[in-house]
Structures are given as structure tokens and as C-alpha cells.
Length: 131
Figure (cartoon, rainbow, N blue to C red):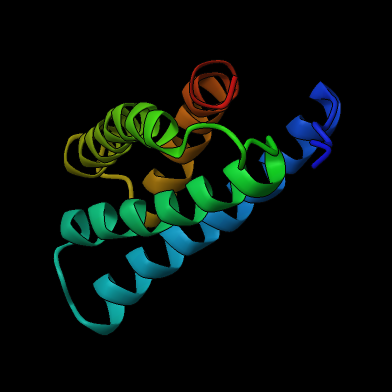
């Protein structure tokens, strides 16, 4: 079976599409749990991050980086390490901006998601998990 590995540019575009879908999932869960179910924003943020992470792993592996033939056990272990770090960075940043800078949790989430997404997630996903 031929493996059609996308170019770096194509992977980058696809990764950003996947990141958008994962981020939308993350935000939807965050806002739904916080606003509709009146749960603490930090619980909602972690639950949203986990939901977005599942979407991200599946779509990155199978479409963005086209590594579905790679060892899923190794990929998932690497992804888990990066994912836990990403969740820590996102939730810590969110907490600091909300509690200490008094920025609304949704705007704080947007700011932190952009910084972590651009500065950490793409590079670790491309060059560590799905290399």
C-alpha cells in the first residue's frame, strides 16, 4: 500500500485546519460546561482540552501528518507527554490571566491558546510525535 506523505507546506496547512477543529471542540466544551452547566471554568477548561486533544490526535495522525501507518503506541505515548504539557501550559496561563490579571476566561483562553498553539504545539507535534 502506497503512503502519500504530504509536503511540509501541506502538513502545515492541514495541521492548522485540525488545530482549528480541535480548538473549536475545546472552546465549545469550555463554554458549554461553564455557562450552561455552571461548572468551574478550570474544570471546564481541562475537560475541553482533553476533548480537543482526542480530536487533534486522530485527525493529525490520519490526515495532517498522514502517519496512520506509524506505531500508534509510540505516537500515543509521545502525544500524551506533549498533551499533558500543553494542558498544563494552557490551564496555568488561563488561571493566571483570569485570577491575577482579571481578564474574562474566554478572552484569556483565546490569548493562551494562541501562544501555546503557535509556540509549542505545532513544533512538538510535527517534529516529535509525528516525525
